[in-house]
Image (cartoon, rainbow, N blue to C red; front, top):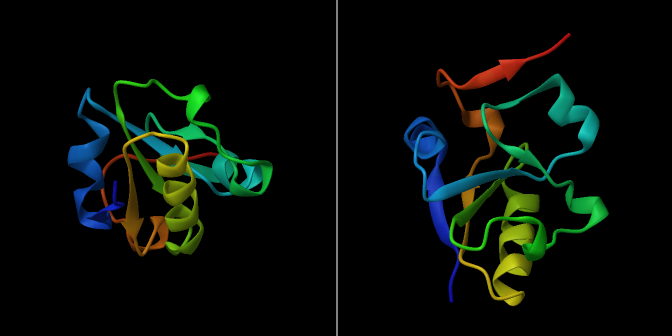
Amino acid sequence: MQIRLFSAGELDDLANRTDVVLVDVRSRGEYEKSHIRGAVSMPWEEGVSADALPHEKLAICYCEHGSSSMMAARELIRQGRRAGSVIGGISEYRGRNLVFFR
């Protein structure tokens, strides 16, 4: 299997799909400040686990700039999952599904 790549501009459509789970691989602190609506937090530094995600869904990882999400997607594929990564990460996202917390 290979990593499917998505642009930050595709995140709004992806966030609304029922066959996709968005995986935020940034730190928990970064996730708690802002994230894409509906995304699950699975920090890269804590390890990613395919078992913690719905098996029937395509796991699309994102991070701040795109490098950690590529490594996370590669690891999920190694664990037997279908996975993708967002090129440029959340720093490139300008859509309507960004949730901010103070």
